[in-house]
Length: 350
Image (cartoon, rainbow, N blue to C red; front, side):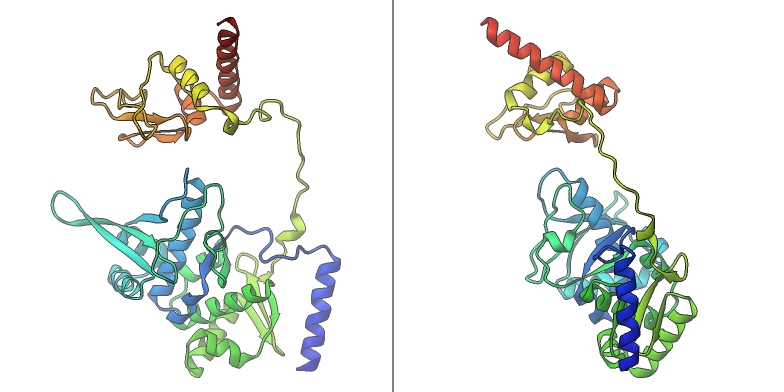
């Protein structure tokens, strides 16, 4: 065991000398999932949670404000992605609700058949997790003290696994790696077995299957999770490109610095009509520039720089300018700057 650790230490030293970044899965697209997922020992509950948290990272990043982290989930589509049966997924949802890991509201169609569910992710106290606009790290931003970092390619490997013992072994391996923040760690077999939640025979079978699929290696106390695409240790960090920072005067203009009064002038000039706001800062409903419905469905908030319509169009006011004028963001910013300059000239004349 001592010689195994010595080899492990030399490997880590060589990687650091070669410039390997001091974080986990450098070069990969990753997502975070709470460490309690290991308690499900590779059963459908664990698999479902992996997919929910993978989707949650995108939902959190694209959100406009901090809100409850809820996802619209269709069981049939989730079954296609995971390889699980719809019955297994339904049972997993029931168990996760019982464990207060999620809250689910099922939606019905006009024919009274269930179409989809609104799934809200919950924290350890049973309270909804919150989105963090512009940030992918769901667990970190929600103050989880213990979570697993998993690359997308590893989740895709789990989708192809036929056995729960393989999933349990593989998820536990990622949990151990996340704890040490390395894809290769020095760990005892008993500790890995206990974390997986499996009996010894099932654990040994899972390890053997993962090794045969070139998902990981284990020997002399050294556990290494491999890149599923190459069957080798992660080497994507070697291909990192230096980021070139360009001076771009168009992007030096910060949309967040625009006042509510300036936004109102810009949008009124854009759409050719005046807007009145209610006590909460939202404009009274009016015709949408996209769906053109006669019903009053479109409204904006100049203080929050947001717009939305019942037709599904929504976003920031900078995006509204871009979509209405059918131009890129550079051109949209130029238009906004021109309108603000126009407003400033009018103020001076008055």
